[in-house]
Length: 238
View 1 (tube, rainbow, N blue to C red):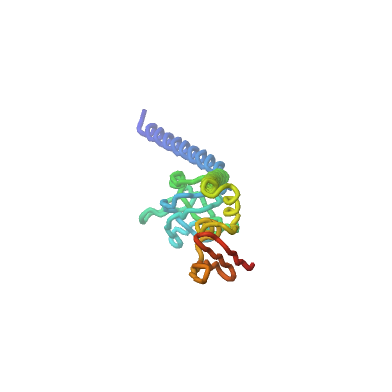
View 2: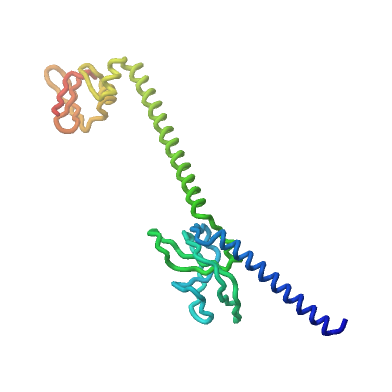
């Protein structure tokens, strides 16, 4: 085999490898596009950098390239294309996925050009998966809130029952019912009146021929009068 034949074989082998590589890239890009293009995604992580452009459909190799952090949020995978990428002073083509930001009104805003090889490392979730996860999180949060409300309700009911039992034990069932309803009756002790109405705003002491009396003042026109720790008069103008 002469030198020309060997050189020809090397050329053919190089062409074959180029064809294989091109087919591999085409297949890889097609598979990627099928999976992501026209999908809405949510990006949770913002630690990866991508090239960002505003309203640009192709990359100007000299101007307009701004490297920023891809922010956490919702995006629409618009397309996959072959774009220039800068590496030092060199320019070369690589496949990028073009992401469009989605704001609260579902309008597409700023575009981000992200190399596919970098995009694969970004912490992303498809919109439907992300929304389902958020729904599950909200349901779990709601469940815990309902459990806490139930626990508090049960605790309050337990305390009310214990309080009722204490009143019945100290003052009897009839008086306990009056106290729980916020009512006072002639003959109540000071302690029973405090249970029903709470502490008075003022206390006044009066003395006459019949002895010493104590007046408790509750707001406007509500008074209780005691003699020897017994309620003898109720003055309550509603």
